[in-house]
Length: 542
Image (cartoon, rainbow, N blue to C red):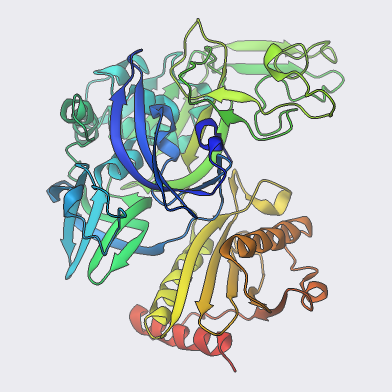
């Protein structure tokens, strides 16, 4: 996870309520105006943070002591938009207060796109569409408001379709960003004429304005999975997690980078230190803290990445992607290095805190790189591969819970897709964190109930857990308890453990057999209704 330095000034939990466009400071650096609301005080604050943070800022995100929390609440749904480019552009003053409240404050002039599909109305903020379509790392975010800036990241290619496309990246592109999905996304926005026009329109239509907007690409039958808020027949989309409709501009894709070499390694005694590029496993005593005070970062093409895997794109077809190595290099490891730069007391910015054995948090930067700055640059990895059937089951369960909620009176339900904190092997699936569905049920004159359903990737058999609290708890205490349960689950390799011993003090625990069973003879809507009735009986059996 990440920590944003400016938000550490507030002692209460903060909710990211709105994104209010971008502006330039006196150094001509681009900043995002993010509006937070205190969970307790309900007060609004405006923070100006580097535009490099925009890839990891979505409405509804929650921060405590500046740290992005793993649980984000909202309703989850999906829609197929016939043509993404045909949305009606409106401003934020047209958002109904009952759909999304600004606490009596002015909603401003930010742009949204309105789509009407099957009697429903979907409002998507322009900044969320831009974020989900283009901003796959901080480097792209830093080039978004630079006219023609993307052309400095690769050797320009004629827009259009290429049977064989080769992308030659420059040193300005961090080499650790170059995985398969990122390269495909970059090919779409840099070479596909539809993607390129949409990218260019962000600067053309947003420069000098108090809002950010663009001309959306004309993606046909665009299926969007999202988290949002709903009232009646209206949705406000807060975060897009998956999107279809993009067309790959080639049949086969090759990519190169000056730092990509075929390395022949001669191994000697193993070096235990993780070296200068370790962020998540650094020797500091806390997560890295992202500077928001205007300090730039030093140049480092091998800058470390922080994985905050939140979304995926599904292209029109699968193609082969090949990496081209520029040359061979022999690397000889002769033993322990006497000094690892940036990992000990020799680095002036990570001296030990006097009187304790911990290092202060490492300060990192997402601002543009400069030869005159010295903060460690850090990159974001937000793209993840299509998660497949295991996480589709989580998505379908959210629909079942929503169907069940429509038949309940006096029950308030909070639903979230939670990412496991980095830990042991069970907490990860491939290169991403495992997911868990969390639903909290509040009912008058009853104690809270929590349902936990963990992603079943890798054929993992794990029952759903129902947690019945024995007294009233505030939401923060419930979340702390959920996090403890998930940490124990990870520690014991994917087995619910210790809940029975703890039940007499805090809650009782019930393991549920899988509620959703395949039945090819029933349509989807009717299946959701049947499963919702079964789940309701299990939760409120008494």
